[in-house]
Length: 370
Image 1 (tube, rainbow, N blue to C red):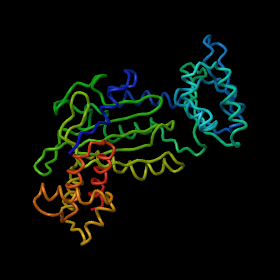
Image 2 (image 1 turned 180 degrees about the horizontal axis):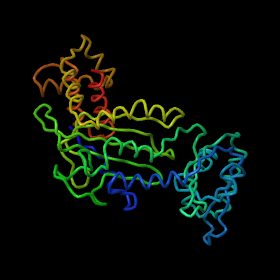
Image 3 (image 1 turned 90 degrees about the vertical axis):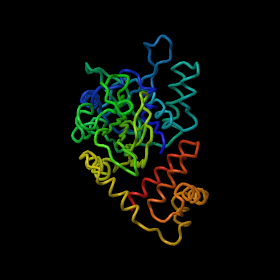
């Protein structure tokens, strides 16, 4: 068992306009953003950084494009796309943090970036994503990625969730309650978050709990994505005891994660790998999880337990995992389920969150392997 902090981190940092009361509300916002966005691929030689003459502080920048559907627009870069543009201009020679924090005037920063785009690097195609204002006026440069970036729109991800789980507040799968008790969803306790940069959804089925090893556990999942390159597309599945008011997930077990980088084939992989898992999860039957646990309990390991553990968790984890199972269960490891129990138990003693979650994810994958 462990405490998952992903939803809490979202809860702690998201402003009010990035919190949604239902998946339908999020869907409307993400569809509007997609409909107002335009993608194009351009050569680095066609991109020009311009000082914003209207900015009295002489700090504003605009991005201009010579041709294509974005030609003639003067787009303001977002915080995120400015960092991407600096990396594309010349990694190490165009530090975004330095430009943001320095007192350099916009014309100087523009000259630096334009020089690097034209002379420091070879000619290369760049995938640009821009958005228009509600009135059709030029808006923002949202992303500057590689030309083969496999964009999966946040709007499409939310559409899929609605198709399979409903609105996220009234069905069996919904924003989790507090300490197992249902709550009226508001901006403070919601677990539905999205911005022009990324999205994160946490839904749970707290009514149809599952009896596992004497514990009455609910099921939950995360889905996250970024259509501008901020993070991978992914989903995490887990069992848990309850969620507290600040969205920490307590007593989490069997965490399993699927993630997909936004490469050229990402949209197809999303359809092939993640959507079927979410579809099965949406049916609400606990049988797949219970079957996995029972099969793991029945599957006997081969003679070389040490080699098996070393391959899965690393050589330094072999003896601690074996030892904690012997202490807690009173016998050596015999089955795949024993390994998952022992690895999860050992993970609880690891103070480093990333390392702990890494071991727990591997333990969860053993259930799938079984």
